[in-house]
Image (cartoon, rainbow, N blue to C red; front, top):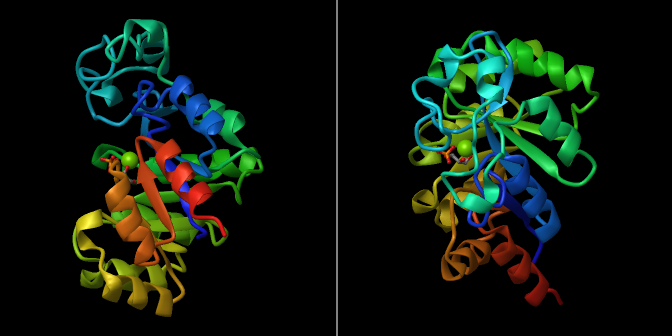
Length: 243
Ligand code: G3P
Ligand code: MG
């Protein structure tokens, strides 16, 4: 069985999400890809954090996009998860590309609506500057961001995140934008969706699955990648089902 095991926000089941610790754990566990969420700081740095506010995963308060990089860099992004991770920081995207490149694929999700229209050009510039155009797949629920990326970067690898049935637009957009995958939630996956995506030359990547039984169901349907907070469970499935 061949599929891509994607560590969702890094190995976020065992380390604080979207930190270097979570990415290092994902690499050590054998994930084939790492997903992260990217936003802009007030002064235009590409930073890695999921929520639009700092409150849940750092010791800061308020909107991420209201703080400069210098302010964000001081925050503790690990203690909320466990005392052993005190001192983990909000990473910059460039640092994570450096950490992950040549070891796993990186899936960069454009997260915040407030960044749209500004973040796309910065992502393109960074990936070009780091010569990482083949090592990063961009995704977003904000489809206008994917349209902008494609218009500006014919080389960009794109996945279309879908928050409903991909047959209601996601599949068509992925074909139109020459994306490589649709990325629906697991509830939308059945044999028909997988067959239709594959017939159009698209992969099916599914978020976010932590139960091995559900992983097996999806893999039996032929999905190409699964996002999990526990990528080691996916790696185990691949190992134990190898011929
Ligand atoms: O990209 C898959 C998944 O990360 C989308 O949802 O909220 O975890 O970013 P979320
Ligand atoms: Mg995400």
